[in-house]
Image (cartoon, rainbow, N blue to C red; front, side):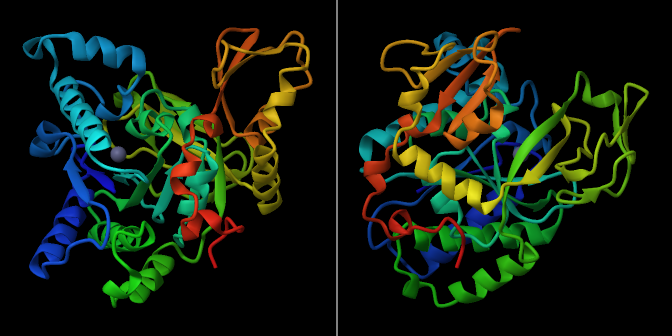
Length: 379
Ligand SMILES: [Zn+2]
């Protein structure tokens, strides 16, 4: 299990939680029953200066094409986050080469606004199943709106990878929630048996309370992107998971008012100077859709899709579909989501769809208690 804290330098709660967990394990001289637990600090210069990033957002540069280029540059020519990227990249690959699967990757964050603790995942069934063990809301599909987050890269390698947002940046509760989440993860991943941590039940209850009993799945359907965060002012007092009525004033962007276009749920409103997103909107994924999509994916329904006009694999043996919208007009995003695809618009007439399931290393997790569970809902 590999955990990252402080990938954003103004989010120290994850680092503090990891330090507390490591310290406690060391003090009690507790070795894992199986496997290895590794904690990594992310953006070191950012943490030192207490800023999200110095030159570039470290959680937006994990794209295969740019990474190749960054890694090929001599160290003195890289900016500070590029150096962090190279160092973390080497760590990740060293760990993957020196240890045996199954692997679990967890990235700890906090948000600028008040929020319930929540999990973000790329929508592969292994991620859904593992994240549904935790009594907090799970957000699907944010990766469709973000370029180059660390976890998308790791997810493409096929491993379980969860982002955990434990609360507001400066709230001491955010450290406690992250700690509770980590202890539960160490047990659920099988590194330690649950009995090794007598206070685990207490932690589970505390986390459930922090999440106010919400353990639904949500899907992101709108992103308010920013040209320049310094020209964005969110109206005070909004929080994540807040229901907002149509017509409500949300923010001012470059001097223009931004209103809620229809009734919905607000997600991660921005209350800081750095960031590429002003806010997101989410909606609940009904549990029938979760069950139905898991079923469809089991039967590799996507293989039938390519027989339809206007749909083809981007290349042989790839996990990427190319959809010509001029022909395949009958398709909509929700259908692809059900099948485990995440879509990006390539140009006006084409969608590029990447399948999360084809990359997922399901055999690595077969036989584990959470993988064999049928339900994707917490008990
Ligand atoms: Zn963050």
